[in-house]
Amino acid sequence: MSNKRVYTSYEEINRDLQILDIERKIHYYKARQGVTKLKNDLTLPNLIDGAISNSSGTRFSFFRLTLQSVAPLLIKAVFRWMGR
Image 1 (cartoon, rainbow, N blue to C red):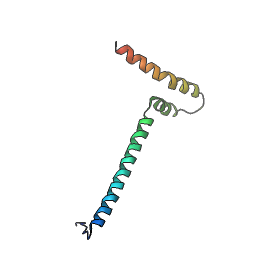
Image 2 (cartoon, rainbow, N blue to C red):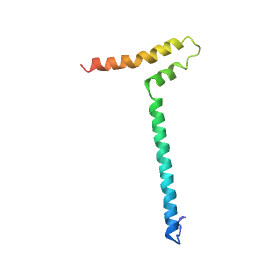
Image 3 (cartoon, rainbow, N blue to C red):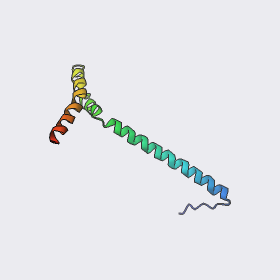
Image 4 (cartoon, rainbow, N blue to C red):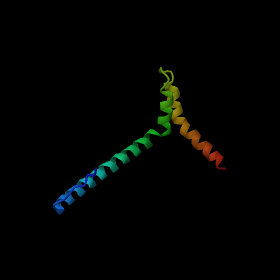
């Protein structure tokens, strides 16, 4: 079954084109927000926090803070060392 619309004026066509353009912009904006959120979620401190937060108790809080602050420095040092 075909859903072809019959337009009777250019105003109707322009109105539908404006609606489609706004819908396209909304979808683009939502996609950009999703990519930004994904980039923020995939940072090293967030990944470490997610891996450690599965453990219960507060005894890991010091370890978590230490690992979150030291891990990026260690990774950079390893990459610099490998680049020699």
